[in-house]
Image 1 (cartoon, one colour):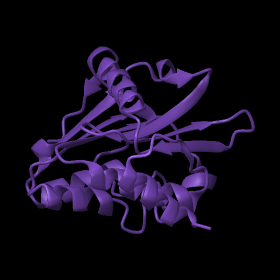
Image 2: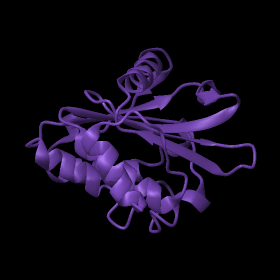
Image 3: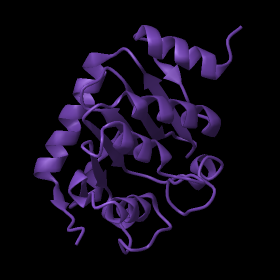
Image 4: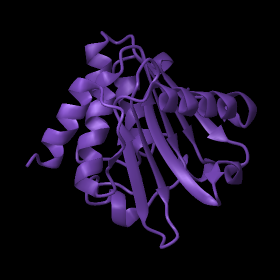
Length: 195
């Protein structure tokens, strides 16, 4: 029987259109890394909620979704694209702290980008109306490579726990998340100055 990492690698390689439940911290970390590795030109992340019980085991050093080296997948992405890749982030306004605060993923991303003069490759947007980004009253997070068939999607369930699903072979799902992201980026966000 395949363990979760082997199963994920198999579905990723074959681009199987089958949802993979990834609602545990260890599984989410495996899926997150694989999806980031698929991005060639750009990567988009919507950050709609923070569940400390879910993210802390993966990302123990910070208050917001960040790992011991929280942005390693993003650093790998930038290095793999020769510094040309773009990361687009939409966040609820309450999760955009002082941009110089390196406790959160946004602060750490910005610090890395500034260190290597790559600020123009990070687009950060804050929601103007945070409540508009919910499904059935539940907040959501998602991550997808712009040009791919994959995505990672998580939401809070009725028991206030985090449920997450990934798919490595669903171009329609990827396109739908891209459309949702683009809609909100254009209609319900304000670009944050990184200067």
